[in-house]
Length: 350
Image 1 (cartoon, rainbow, N blue to C red):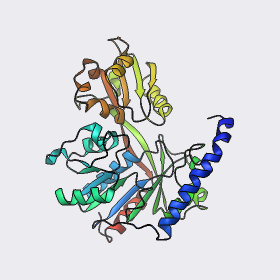
Image 2 (image 1 turned 90 degrees about the horizontal axis):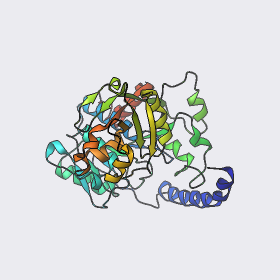
Image 3 (image 1 turned 90 degrees about the vertical axis):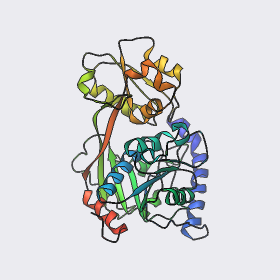
């Protein structure tokens, strides 16, 4: 965004910030009520829009909880899904869900953890009660939960990009902030995220000390392999000597395209769609442009929108699409993550 456009939008950002301040005051002062679920709620959220890596971190927490013998469930709002109704997915326990009704991020979580309930509804309290009634759970992970203040949380993980640009940004629409920087003070743990190894000597705690005294952990997102439409894993070597099209519909496409270039030196085209785009047959045609000799790579979030679509999954071209598998890896501060989880369970966690 150019400086001139940003200056034009700043008055609207001031109005947005005013609305955020009023809402936060309502909850901080007790004027607005908060509902509580009968089991602990662990929130994962951020103060800005755009990809800070919440979904991979949610999956990391789910793995940790499962490994410690807990029975987690995930609550989400299901951004850009095609219904406002309650949807619960738990394939291994007989609850299938249409991806367009569930949303791409919840569908990705459910695909990776088919035995745990993933519930989607704007009213996360009602969604949680429905999960407890139908499936049971002893802890909820609240995806994108920082702004969901009407639900009581026992633990708040606040994610921020390693650059800490959020600390200098403006409110929407001139910037990317959707919540006050003061909300960082309410974090139990700040998780810095990066798409590469963290640089040494970042002095993150010192830079954050003005806003929060919470401990800091660092998580990067490492690519592991490729996944095809049938769920088969492939090494990146299969891209050798192939012409590759990279495409995605995410908030920060350039980040994916830069990584795709490192994975495959043969990227001949890059195609970007709007964030959370629901693909159709015409999009698949546009990606391949009739060339039967190329393959395509995309993000796991984009791939799930295609692979789990009943009609698209039948197309021959979809067999030449591969998802880049990405996994959250804790670079530092894992002891802070574990101790925070332990506090939620009265010191009994691992």
